Image 1 (tube, chains in turn green, yellow):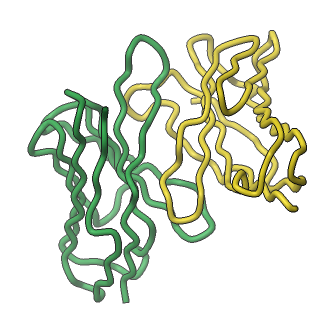
Image 2 (image 1 turned 180 degrees about the vertical axis):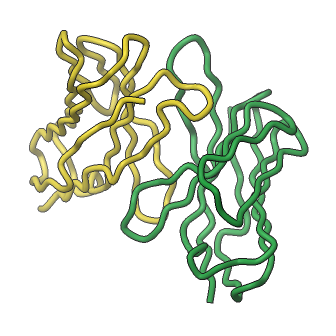
Length: 114
Length: 111
């Protein structure tokens, strides 16, 4: 069966510090991968998605970046965090198999920027 | 990308059937309708997906009228653990299509 891992689960970082969040998927090949952010009391905002190694599409311009160095690894990074980067970060995967996309989400990372 | 409209919140009681309706007037021919459930501090979880008429699984039913401009998620005999936010998404899928999560419907189940 497929599983998705995210770490760390929680993170407190000072403003201006770098960020690296990692997501890995097991049990599937060539998945679509996604990074979302959810601010408190808000819906999910799609940040990045990837359909293959090295292929990244950005949905929202910001000081975050994403990379996909391996088929089942997706990394979210920042060189300098802002207060507004605080939120709940979710990674998801999907495999489009002849019908509409269904996404499976990881446990998330709660990021607090102070 | 079809936009969806859902009620912000709903209340019900244990043992009742709950119906949450989603409007999607601009749904395209190839679009599917997908519902997710999210508990606090967790990622959304897939509930059900459909294209037309009725779909049923062990968790819920999804009713889609012929014009497909709306859909209704039906949760039979809810319990306190069904308290969550429910999202309706419409799209064909793949890449960024159909991946707009609105604020969803906050369902509160009372004893």
